[in-house]
Image (tube, rainbow, N blue to C red; front, side, top):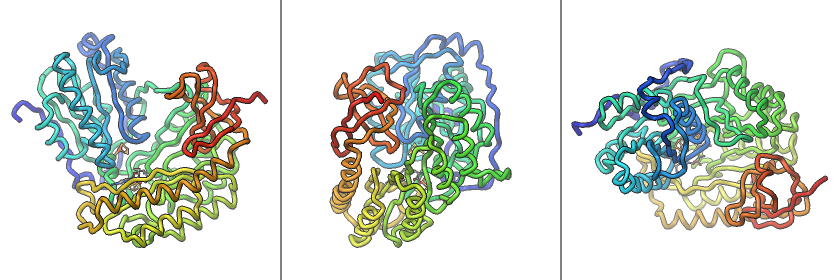
Length: 479
Ligand code: SAH
Ligand code: SF4
Ligand code: F3S
């Protein structure tokens, strides 16, 4: 271990703290001539796992590296720097990363100059860093979610000292404005409205890896959104682990309803937001969604479980009854709303009866789509300390039962779409058939239809012709 520079190491006890107020830091780093001459025209490969927060971080990392004139490559073999931007939310997310780190052994054997970097949520855990350093000599640099803005400084230092380098801290976190950004798409964009999470659901690693919940200033958010509107973007998604608590930490009277309305008024054709937390979701937000046509009538409202005792053990701050009452209030004002959710099956000691409550409430809510997960213990979280009396085999059985039950409503909603025409944002050429395009209507269901590549990034009208349960088939109509 002698040849490793430890600038900072993460610590989950530090990650639990919520003492420090965030600083707003304006990014104005001038890269050194040395760095520019070394990396000008060189290639960076980046592989991002996890959620939209990580995707948005990828765009910042690419933006920072573009200030030293690096270009992106999708081929790791031709990379000069390779970055794995990791996710820690479940064990299988981490396993995928280990798989990709493994592949770099052979790549580095061929390309000895390649600098392999790890960042993202996974390396916000000390035991993971220790394991990686021990097991994977091909990893050169590890940095965290809180110091992405230090990337060029870290790179400079690494080149100077030429030793394996770790700079990851657990802290409340700051807000960094004016960061360079290289957007992945030129028609849809993610905009952070807040960082971190203070909810500490007992199963979840995110509050430790992403720090304290902190809201960006409304004027900075609106400036970013306005620039996107002015450059012709079609869709903005406002991002926060809990968008509904936006502004709680600011003393300027703003809240999520005010922010959402201000962004809607900028005139972006489509506006979305992620993720909503049931007990923080306020009725004024419902009114704003109902009032503006450009806010998609779609809410991702994770329930996690339908059993009150499980919700309590998860540390979720609502009951199933309160959740249903919220859904009723939403549907009363926005009857055509599409609702989706996240559900965890097999939380420690979940009984079959408790599990059945999840199916029961899900059918009542009548979701259009859902993300379902088998509980995965995350080291250092309270739930991971529980002795669990449910076998993985039983959890897998429940998982399948849930998926089948949810599919009944998904299928019903998809069938209702057949014969109707929807505005669809065209996103890509279909993976399976080059003649087909894929895109999304307001409710985030994927629709495939024949069309020319030049339509990518445009909103077109598509008549739905067939329901394939998890996707739909349609045809472009000119009305
Ligand atoms: N802030 C968002 C999303 C967090 S992570 C929210 O609160 O909804 C996305 C989803 O991953 C969560 O909603 C939860 O369903 C799931 N998840 C988080 N930790 C998990 C764990 N330890 N095991 C299984 N699923 C988990
Ligand atoms: Fe995790 Fe809960 Fe925060 Fe979502 S609200 S990020 S599930 S702790
Ligand atoms: Fe994963 Fe971190 Fe997002 S753990 S889900 S990348 S916040």
